Image 1: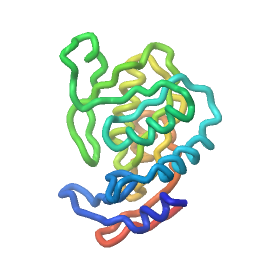
Image 2: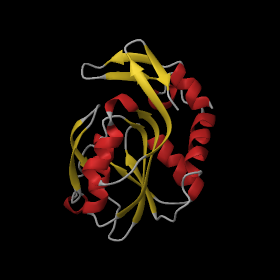
Image 3: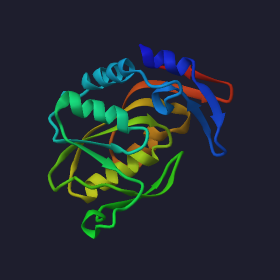
Length: 187
């Protein structure tokens, strides 16, 4: 699996708050190969044995993967933004976010009452982005059908935080443990 290979070779940097991996999949260092996206997307498709209406993600690192899944499934994509639009009717669904990488507000448009949604994210770390996405979907009247994260940094206990704060379970494709000098693939 290419994703396992990428994380085995990933560099680790201290971002001041946490240990962060720098790699092809999340940072495009080196440039992200289409076969990596396709491989991860097909792995996720194996877990999508449910009916759903829309895919959501956040606009940063989850965007390439969620876009690939949207193209493969033919399902619409709604992307949470880090900034509001100047059109007041588009800024109704605002939630707070506190994640490993960002703290502030998240704006999610395109989710309607009754939409059955899957949440896709590249990395589950502290759980902050996923918790905010769940809150945004539920605030709009949508229903979370499944949450899938390609990679899970197990040492930050994001899975438990998401379960405790939202009641939802996470499916992850690859589990890793990050230390100051290396990334260990756990699963």
